[in-house]
Length: 114
Image (tube, rainbow, N blue to C red; front, side):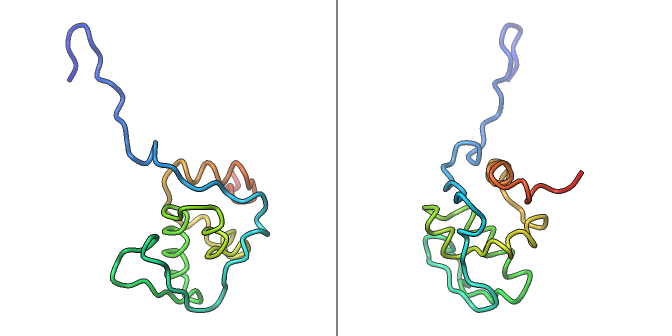
């Protein structure tokens, strides 16, 4: 609340402070499955449906969004994300700002052309 002598502090969001795993050194390090069905562990996806068909674009996007947000380590990201497929779906992923910025900083090829 603003008062005569104080300003309202900037709003803080959980996503601005949450620890996310670091991107790997190279996109080629992301050797996750492509074109098969995967089951995510409950530590990444705690919903009732944890099996996804990576041949389906919507399923692939769900898996990548959840893994990039919820994985506990870079190794876990490597296990589920495929580098070539990530480049293809990247523009359509809904990710926290910090995740998107970190990955685009590491991999400029993910940054949309201006």
